[in-house]
Image 1 (tube, rainbow, N blue to C red):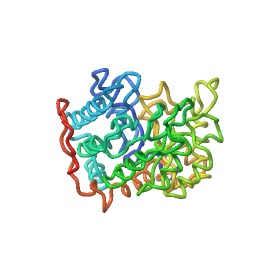
Image 2 (cartoon, rainbow, N blue to C red; image 1 turned 180 degrees about the vertical axis):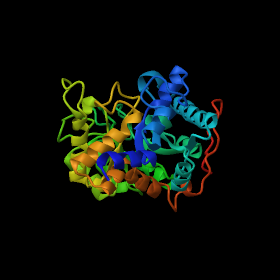
Image 3 (cartoon, one colour; image 1 turned 90 degrees about the vertical axis):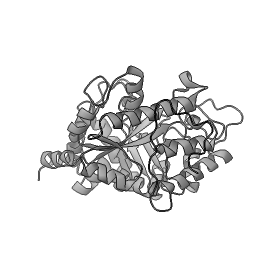
Image 4 (tube, rainbow, N blue to C red; image 1 turned 60 degrees about the vertical axis):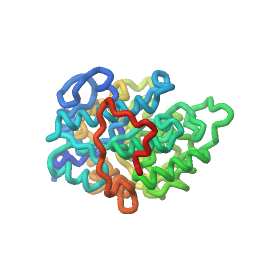
Length: 357
């Protein structure tokens, strides 16, 4: 089978799992229904065209706009994801474990995994983490670019009281995420925090949308040592599509070969079984040439096959590797394994509820 034919078959099977898209926030703010083709880089139409079978819809709480009020904003974004699934029940399903993901794919529906980008959304309150979990949360990027009292980000400027890596409360957060069945996401974290989480997490963590620092020295990218440790732990690194993380700013438009180079380097260092995709669609201004939106995952599949990745390695990078860690994180022994996702309407107020009891 030619690379083009195999790429088409992967698209037809909806084999892609994108570990980080920002589309739900854009849709909420712009009043746009992702069920129809429109502005931005991802909607249900282009997702189907591109073979997207599962995606983590990140609820990114912009600290410049929503501090205080981070939890309320995260809740509103999660409610918007529930509303999307309610409007288009035959096309998208909010899923909480591997069984639900497989069922959604079998039914021809996009498996939507609810995520939160930035631990400031839980406002240092484990009950709020529990509430978000009960209503679908299954992945949390522990920190964004703003440092927290319990975890340091990859950016400079941390003041006094910020730990070098993961603080005591941060360890409680990661432990609770393991009990619930919520993937710990290391993107945006300091290297020390990455190593700390790898030591204490109950399940293999992920880095949902990062690049390789060896190829482009950017604070948001992972060192080879971090790649090796994530791979050794069985985690998965989702390579981001954001051009400034992949190459110097003067390389615009960005050739898709730059994205391929980061995927290949991560596969060499961490192992091909520990690499995936984290596009950051709708959180970025543009993607690499030829992979500008969610209809174009097939073009990336052809590039992977043409580079020399085998069919199974390509399936893994496109989605199977993230499916594996999602299954581990939500598997037996976690609350996610048997929990039903509670409905969440926009007006729902938790009132300090411990939703996991």
